[in-house]
Length: 85
Ligand code: SF4
Ligand code: SF4
Image 1 (tube, protein in one colour):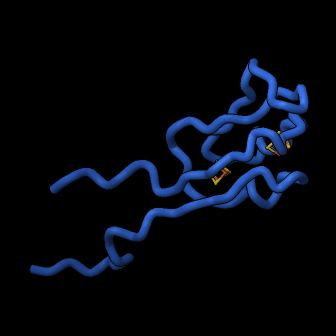
Image 2 (cartoon, helix red, strand yellow):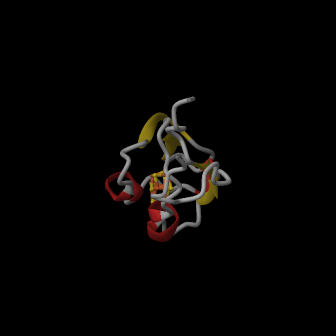
């Protein structure tokens, strides 16, 4: 049986909207957001995504500048505790 996917979500990041406030960094339960050393068009460090996003939407909810859009994969399995014999 193939292993369950570890990445269930993803985000798009509008880097030129980011003001580098870093609120999203500790808000991400998966710890997959980091600030880049580079600067965006406004002269701010901006956020980037690493593997492991769960699609929980915390970044979307906390960001004051609407930088994120969150995507989730379609569920590959139905949630069930029953097993066939
Ligand atoms: S909360 Fe929004 S504006 Fe602040 S660093 Fe994160 S993406 Fe950038
Ligand atoms: S959706 Fe959740 S896990 Fe994914 S980057 Fe945002 S806060 Fe982190």
